[in-house]
Length: 462
Image (cartoon, rainbow, N blue to C red; front, side, top):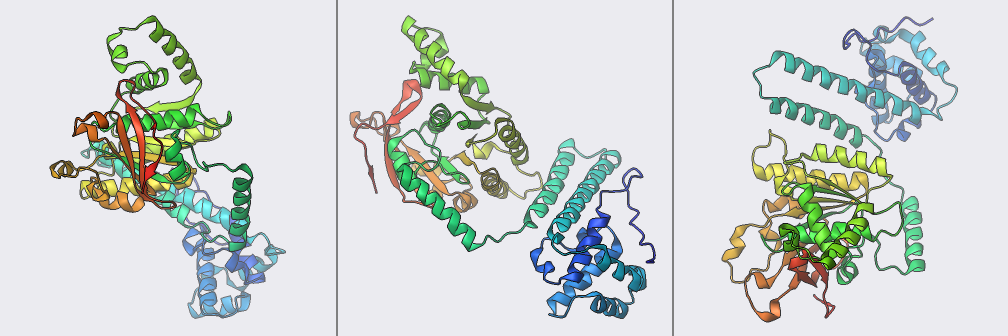
C-alpha cells in the first residue's frame, strides 16, 4: 500500500482548486508503460501543470531521463529520485508501482495530459482572479483603469500561454491532402474569388477576395474615402453572400456612431444623395429607393459596434460571441486602428499600436476571418510633390507593415488636382499582398452616394 500523497493546500476561499488527480497518475503510469508516449505529448505538458507536488517531481525526472536518452521506467525513475533524496517524499517504491498498475495501456495518455493541462490553466485563472481581488481591496488608491489593465494583461497572458502549449506541427501528408482537395474544388468551380468578395471585379481579380485569416490594412489621407470604401466592402460581403449561413460582418466604428454608419450604408445602397438624408429633403423617388434599400439592409447580417477606444481584448470577446451566435463570421472591419486602446503599460504609442496590430493578426487566425483595419497616414506626405502613398507613410508603420497580409492605399488625385479627367477616379494601390501580386486597381467614387463602383474602363496597371 503506497503512502498518501499530500495535495497542495493553496485554496481560494477554502475550496480545493481544480485538479485531475487520477489523470495525473494515468499520465505518469502510461509513460512508464511506454516511454514513447512522452513523444505524443509534443511538449504540451510540463511539471508545473501537475497539481500534486510528488507527481510534478516524478514528471520532471521523466523529462530529464528522456533528454539524456536513458530508459524511462519505474526502476530508473526510482534511482534518480533516490539520488535526489526525493523518493520518500514522492511516495516511495510502492507509489511508483501503483502508478504502473493503475493504467492498463498508454493509449489514452494524450487525453489524460490534456485534462491535467486544462486544470492547470483553471488554477492559473483562479490565481489571477485572487490577485485582482486582493489588489482591489488593498490598493484603493490606484486608478480603476490600472486595475482593469492589470486584470486584462494577466488573463491574456494565461490565454496566450495555454494556446502556445498546443501542438504546433502539422504533418505534410495531411497538408497535401487538404491542399489537393482545395485545388480540386477551385478547379471544378472555376471561381475567381476564393475569399470574401469585395464586390469590385478588378479588385477581386487581383486579390481573389479578402482571405480568411488575413489582416488587411486600408489606409489613406483624410477625404480619400477610407470609411466609405470600407463600408462598401462590408455591405458587399453581407448583401451578396452566397448562402444564408454566410455574410456575417462585424463593423467596429470608433469614430462615427452606429446610426451615422447605418445612414451612410442606406444612402449607398439606395443610391440617394447623402445630403438629402442630412436635410430631409427627399423626393418621392428617393422615398421609394430608401424603402427598398432599408428592407434589404434590415435582412443583412451586418452588426455595428460604436464603442469608443475599444481594446483588442474586448473586440475579440465580442467577435467570438457574434461568431458563436450566428454560426459563422466572414469579415471584421475596424475604423480605425489608431483609435483603438492598448495596454496602459505600453511605453509609447508606437509600441501600443504594435501590440494592437499583432493582436488583430492573431484574431484573424484564431477566428478564421478576414480582418480589415483602417489606418491613418502621416501628414508629411502632403509636403511631397508626388502624394501617392507608400508603406513608409503608414502612421506607426513598422509593426503594421510586418503584421499585415495585405496593405491597400486609397488615392484620389482629384483631392489635390481639380481636373475634369480626375473627377470620380479612385485608385486602390495594393502595396503589399503576401499571397498575390501588387499593383493598382481603378474604381469610380460617387461622392454623393458615399459609394465606390467598378470603373468603366476596367483594368489595372502593374
